[in-house]
Amino acid sequence: MSERERSGRGAFLDARSLIGCRHRLHLTATYPRVLSGVAEDAGVQQRRDAAVAHREHVRDTLVAVQPEQWVVIDPAQPAAVRAEATMQACSEGALHIWGAVLPQEPDTGRRGGSEILLRDRMRGGYIPVIVVNHKVTDARQPDPADHHPLTSDLYQWNPQPDRHVRTRTQPRDQQRLAHLYRMLQRHGLASPALVGGAIGLAFDRILIHDLTGLLDDYDRRYADRIAVIRGELPTVPSKVPECRQCPWWSRSGTPDELSCERWLTEHHDVSLVAPGSRAELLRRHDVETVEDLAGWSGEAPDDWQYEPFAEAVVTARAWISGAPLVRRVERLQVRRADVEVDVDLESYQEYGAYLWGTLLDGVYRPFVTWDPVPTQDEGRSFAEFWTWLMARRTEAAATGKTFAAYCYSRNAEDKWMYESARRFAGMPGVPTEQQVREFVDGPEWVDMFQVVSEQFICPNGKGLKKVAPVAGFAWRDAEAGGEASMSWYRLAVGYDDGEIDLTQRTRLLEYNEDDVRATQALREWMVPSAPGGRSAEAEVPSMADFREPDHPRRTIGT
Image 1 (cartoon, helix red, strand yellow):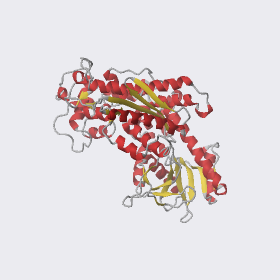
Image 2: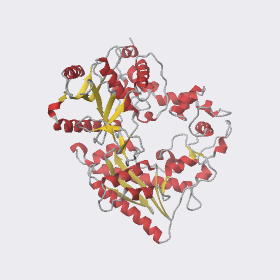
Image 3: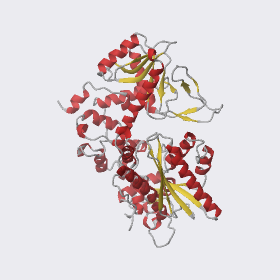
Image 4: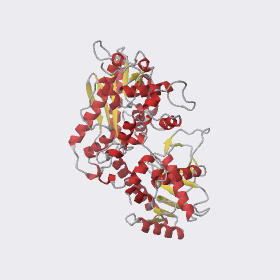
């Protein structure tokens, strides 16, 4: 019997597999031994460890307040033992069960557990409440005209409209709660209320999810996924955002014949230039390869709802020619100023921003705290950064000079400026949220990612580490990247009572410095401040060069 045939027998599916790539699910189920020796992505492991720590903190806090109302299932026991203990606690009418595991279902293939099962005292049955290590709500100013989500107090189930938060869409949470509801329903333990709850990273309330409209979608999704792992439905690779951290993409230890990157490249699959849902739509129009898309003539598909379709066709033609960038416009534009500051921050997951790096007149200045985040010292480093930046802005205005600050993909910088203003409000030098808003919404805060997106087509991606090398910039550290920096940071601050590694602090500072210098190099390449240097307008082909399928093959630098 083949490994594939063995893997399909007795296959079980938990809720984590309901969201994400179907082909990854197929490979993992069909070749379970292949990845046994492959190192897990460091970022994935760190997030898993952080989630475990968060759940333990939530458990210890909740149980300590009302220990007599809780049954805590021993996590060290085998799953079958934990399931038996959970069912026993339910049969005895326990009010709160932590670490619940529901019996596996050999016929349906379902397996799963809930951090919390709450007894529905009014209707009977149990309500699943999951504890997750991501945000489930965002703060907002109360507005009577808005739709208000239902939330409950952490210690007493009492769902009420909450005017102070808005829901963050988290399909994975909703699918997991629907999965748990079906498992509870099988044993007659599901509350008729048809709701579930989620405690997020903030650990300040329970967000209530109405499951009524979710179950049909869940049932369809579950039927598809269980058929995939049982080998009843075929799958093929397709490029999606998940590929960036997937061991089946291309990683040491993964056989070439199972590498999705190799398969897609060999087949010139259309998802290489139109990833995700774009590729799914194109395949419905018989566009399977990059060449199919490059050769498209006539009107765009009626159901195309993305960028202008002509740009998708040009992207395919550029990929075939090997051009990493294509100009959308004849004349490139970047806001330039007399005083130019480049900014890049480093944060550790959702815990805090520990480093604000700046570049002015060729001099790199970091504003940093090496106290493990979250820490009050973040407020000090952020205040110093903000005070320094605003001082340069004020000085420029006082001397009649223009000012601009640049970042690459402002979402992170904006988020942590607002977060820091809220968390450290009142500390010396910390701005108000309104002061942050006035700056980031003004013309002096320039997002180079947006500038690149508006003026270039990028067949290989728009990330700074994809685009800046085209401008001639190179990072000193070959491993430089957001995920790698998470590992460096843990060593740099001695997380988990480890020994502090000062070399990793140097590594982080150099990585941050290279990021701000890359942003400067990209800006200077797009709109040179002095004649005679490299120029993107001279080097990068325009869309006009790719109007026809038999476009001339032009390469950057020729």
